[in-house]
Image (cartoon, rainbow, N blue to C red):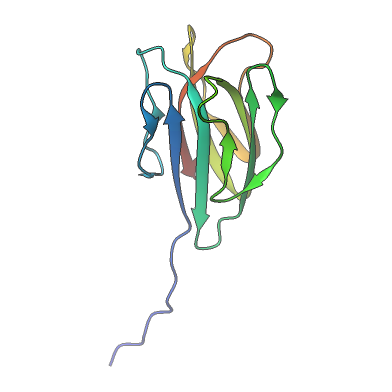
Length: 136
């Protein structure tokens, strides 16, 4: 007779973005691209959702505002209906992540890895157009 396997669920991250002229996307899985490339559309807000033991806190750097307050998994960071671009995202996690962003006029940046990651730019007036996140 076989032994019952413990009921262990892999940690997961899902995320979505509020995109200029599009609105909220559906939640997508780790490694998928949130946002657009080559369309010059800004990301205005994000929701990151960690499950099965993945704890997240995050905040965004917004045009004309600066850094938002920290929010927890499943909460909105950013603005909707204000035509305000996100320029950077900062994430704190209890598990190491791998994050990559696509910046206006620059393209895909090198991958950032760790439990505390900041992607994007500050003070350069460049929109963060897309990003992807993986759990390492």
